[in-house]
Length: 303
Image (cartoon, rainbow, N blue to C red; front, side):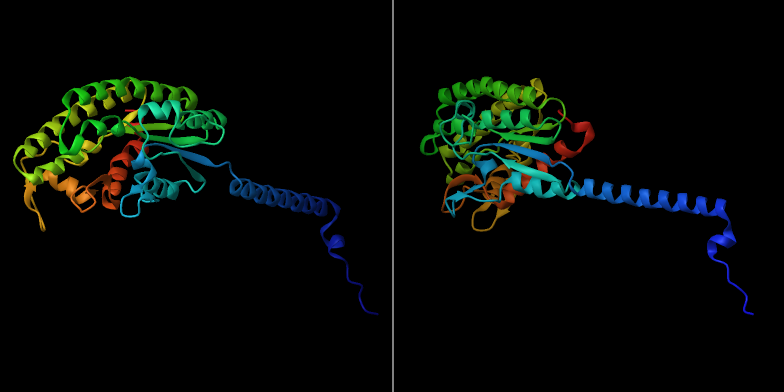
């Protein structure tokens, strides 16, 4: 007669079978947890970068006469997102914005908010712990009116600089109060487009030199306000060599000029037929490069 074959359960015995069953169940549970964890990771809450400011933050370009996505804020977002795929950009910049309109509104419209600052504050309060970065540029439009036709209204500039200092304190405190300690807050100093007047020679070179001095005052006011309100400052004025009248740079078609004048010609539209103060794409990259260490270096947080 043929020999009967025992089933696997007959060979291993009941106790071994129970242990194998428990082990299989544990493995199935672990697999389920891993799958659930992966699903949760893919559906993680977004993080945010909130950018505020004037036409620099908005990306205005005179050749197309509109805002486009070439701003330093767009460049920063693209870089920051590489290490944080869930990062989203809340782009609030408004061309023509002054410190007063940022606080009170009147230029750009924001859904459910009275002003750019109000929109930012409401967003920060609605997303506690999710906002990682807040950047800001504001104040240039407060003093542009003081530079009529290449001239320089000294009293207007002095008054404008110190009045905007009070507004920046108000803006920064509101943002910090709404966002708490979690985000990196970074403001910026400005480059000086009036340096392009150096190319005209004569008395306009004296005006250009004077505007560089006043831009130092503006930078000191902005930096002081930032320091007082927990903001770091991206020193764009220095990145554009604001005070470097000494080093000569050869510019094709324009001759040899001081380095600070060269930077304005290379990184803004001032020395083109547009005669426009806005940074060009190369200038926006310089601004982004100046902001980035303040946003990513631990030692630079809110300094």
